[in-house]
Length: 68
Image 1 (cartoon, rainbow, N blue to C red):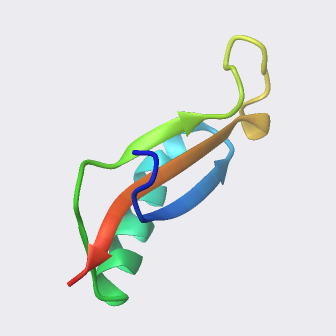
Image 2 (tube, helix red, strand yellow):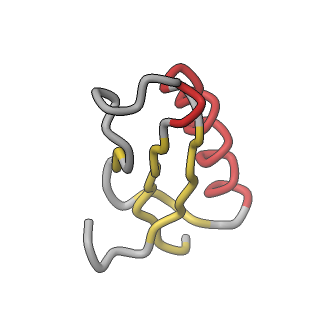
C-alpha cells in the first residue's frame, strides 16, 4: 500500500521462485522484529506477455510491516 512501511525483495527470474522469496522475506521480517500489518503483494515490473525468457522477468514483493 502506498505510504506503508514495507520489507521489499526483487525477484529476477521465473515466477516459480516466488515461494522461496516469500519464505526468505518472511524470515527476515520475523528476525528483524517486525510484524505484518497487511497481506503481502507483488508488483510485476515486466510484462510476461512481452518477456519470453523467464530469467528476464522482474517481480517486486512487498510485505507491509511495523515494529513489534
